Length: 417
Image 1 (cartoon, rainbow, N blue to C red):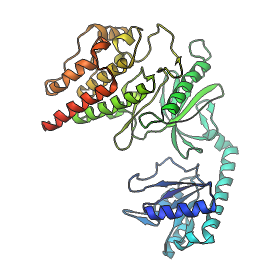
Image 2: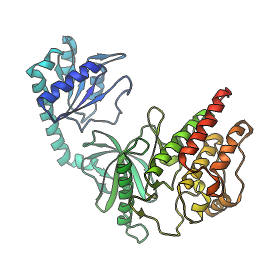
Image 3: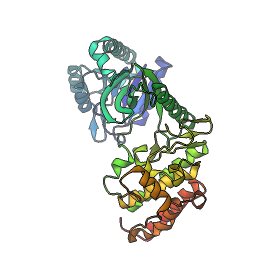
Image 4: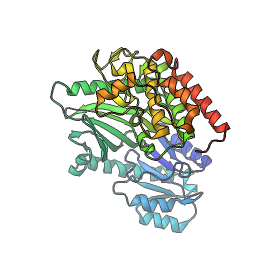
């Protein structure tokens, strides 16, 4: 059994967890704080849970109010309102089709009876959903049928993959699904895409750090390779940069990116495609790196690109990467320098009409100058964007320390964003 508990009172959460485990030792209880985590995503149906328990009241909210909204979501998991001694709330909840438990019921047989009834109802609903035509259609992501996932909407379409947001029954949360297009030509066979997805999955599983996207699952369905990953409601850094970043925020993000690079580099992984679209934003201001399909992983001894092939995104590639020369961790730091310049100015450091011209400028043109108000950042940028790797920071931790020092100086001067 798996339950979702919407409750703010830590003592009551502990009490419910204790009662649940004493009844079902293998049961899982996931707690959602309505105050710190906010409302449930509007697309979320809690299909991975046997029931959703709602506290009667918390600072700024009421369980019955949430129950009214959640009961209106077709296919939402059974609701159980912890209604205290409020008889009218119990009647209103019952009218919505929700179960009710008083606080006293938590220590009685009613606790197990209500949850067992909710579990049975949800099991029936799942069986109907899985086997019905409508249910099968909701498990289709483009041309790929992926069992156990409900498609909500397409997020983006690329030349080789489509990105969807869906709900995972097993994970009990919203997820992002990257689904490869069915390509039968020699350049992009399905097996090659699965190999890239497998590398991403292996890297994320091995590093297992908040600085790296969490990956849930991968497979092949209807000859389409697919990868299931953590869903970021705030989107990526590219979206954040659409609104002009304050200098202090740009520096803080650059520090977070440098530290994330230090984490993957310590694990023997070079990203090799670092760009704003591959940097996701978490609640609370931290970041996570995604898309390791072009990475080089020393632990796996796997490099999915051919020797001598130019790979990556031209605007963010180091001179050596753009010329298909050997790369190391300092190449990722060069990409960080490009991102820092763009966060501060809203422009890319080198622009041209075609990719090869951009690659040429990365190698031949001098490091661009930041506007005068960012003069304090220029020496740091010169090192990140140095043409020769030996002139850059020796590693990501050194870059993070330098960025932190620059931010501290900026804040000490009382600079206005």
